[in-house]
Amino acid sequence: LGPGTHALREKEHRFGAHNYAPLPVVFQRGEGVWLWDVEGRRYLDMMGAYSAAAFGHSHPRLVRALTEQAGRLALTSRAFSNDRLPLLLERLCVMFGYRRALPVNTGLEAVETALKAARKWAYQVKGVPTDAAEIIACHGNFHGRSIAIVGLSSVAQYRHGFGPFPPGLKLVPYGDPQALEEAITPSTAAFLVEPVQAEGGIIVPPSGYLSRCAEICRRHNVLLIADEVQTGLGRTGRLLGCDHDGVRPDGLILGKALGGGLLPVSAFLADNAVMDVFQPGDHGSTFGGNPLGAAVALEVLDLLFETRIWEHAERLGAHLRERLAARRPPCVREIRGRGLLIGIELHPDGPSAALAAELLLARGLATRDTHRSVLRLSPPLIIDQDTAEWAVDTICDVLAALPQ
Ligand code: PMP
Image (cartoon, rainbow, N blue to C red; front, side, top):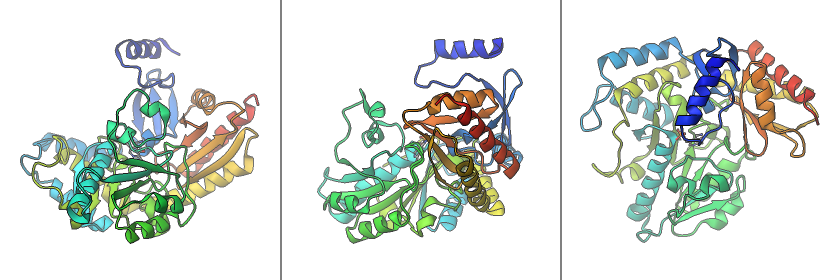
């Protein structure tokens, strides 16, 4: 580590809260799929900011949209309308096939928005007694870090010491529609699900899972809400993760890549029966729907449909998984994923994914482990085949050389 890296990391450690343990590198600049640290060393970004940097770093069109809008108007709050947001709302509704969209900032806010909508819908439309509404989510989920949402988590570390949590939150095993059906009661408002569990270790459910869940939810008058914060906008090789099963959820949550990796933009989309529960003053956020984020998100959606980047993600993702499987170093237990959301699970009794991530960093490849000893690959979707092949070959070299 150079002195610049060391000094900055020490400052961060000294003055920052210790809620993260970043790898020993300090990035200064990004362009496309590449990152440069403060020492001038170049790294391939195989994290893509947890899938948010889908079009890479500092994409010229996104930077232009951001800077032009910043120079014109960045924020008024929703006390007034701005001239960008209506265009974004229309575009979201038309592109994804919903009647209404509610913009907020981070993924967690959009999830909270969805859950608030579902509860109020349960009281106003479904007739559930007040304060009785239940939300069902899945073991191994990740939906964010608010108190309500970690109240839905099965991960002890996310919950420990942060209770009490709101009532009416239930968990069922992921990938098991029967368990969902058994958990539903007349008070169930919604089933919240990720099309692929990303933070949970890149867990891909059996094919047909979401369509069976959709059928069960329909039969019980329960809202199916898909958290596509990570899987949406091309990441899994389709426009939406739900598209793999041909499912249109009652509520759709988008985030991360919607802000082009430049700023937080998220949204909850639904039809009138759900969205009309919100009346003026019920819900909102100072920054939600700001013209800066709206201008960038509009450009992101343009780029997405011009490039149909999900087709590239589908092809390249399948190719990379095959290439990894063909080499498959001995410490690898399983290779899985959809599109460019790939997990390499290591044997529990072998070297850790955290160690692998540190060694890969030294080889110029930036990625991280998730819990359950899974190395995650979620590069910018614009990564080309040669570069991606170099990455998986380097990963195989490093994994093969690890002490078993
Ligand atoms: N939902 C999913 C599926 C996510 O992966 C994440 C972030 N990893 C979130 C919600 C929360 O998003 P944010 O960090 O923007 O609050």
